[in-house]
Length: 414
Figure: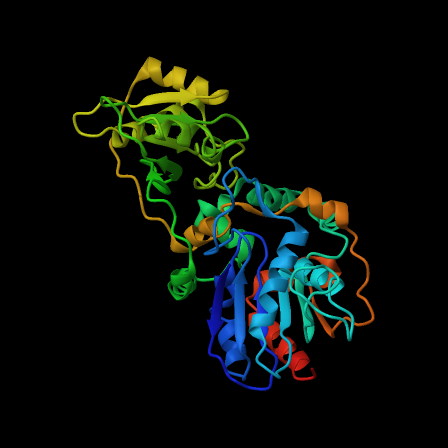
């Protein structure tokens, strides 16, 4: 597992081990929390959980990185090495699903006086404290999601779909909406990326995301998967076009790598106002007409053809097939320069979790988790009002320092 370390302090204070949640890795603690507490005398560590961030990838064919028990056992194998001889045991601090791992760890700790190991539940090494920061509750996330759905069904759907479709990996604005306050400036995201770039997994050079700029200034999301195997003869580039309620991502897992491995340069576009493309003009009831969508394809096609090479093949599914039919009848083109600049932060998010971190079926079979045992360490719980994962004030303002100060006050009492 990847492990980030900040400013070892060699003090009698307990070492701190920060544990991330879904779609993140150790880097998410590096800019703020780790230097904050290192400057106050704590040895700080942040781990990238199994198959996340810079840790080893999952076994080929694995749909998820691990079960709740596996992730907790991984932490148990790590904890003893963080404690200096004669010093206090570490404090575990988990955010989101990381908080559930901490809760599960506490349940598996050895009771006082018993032999502790790093492998067997019920004998996990002791810790000095457990901090749950906007944690997934002990009952799992089903009830919380349902309550949030009742409060704001539209935003709840957008949020859920954003994670399912991983739109944050392709769109800076989606990343901003899902993970940050909406007014966070671009340069702050850039600085964060520079700070953590050394710990991030690099995306594949063959597969990446870019944007195509339309004549009216709107941008279409374009996923690219270049050929990964040589072809016996020049092959036409393939442009995949989705149907209703989908976007470019629907081709990304199967069709694009399949044909890239057979010598084709493959592309998938998110049509106007779909997926990671620019949103519709305010007040618009629909994204565009049949003519508009077809014209958008016509502006994209020339840029996909290499000089002297064959023209692209268009492949449409559902309504995408109608756009291809319309295009084949009318064939009009306009040259444009696609925007191939990719923002670094969503690259980082995309690379952090190539395999879904937690086996939800396994987790749902284990919740609700039982209450902590009598020998559990002191606990710190931080969450939003009305059991929201993040409260309204936190969405409108970046308040990590407030959370850090509350955490610091609790640590001082250990």
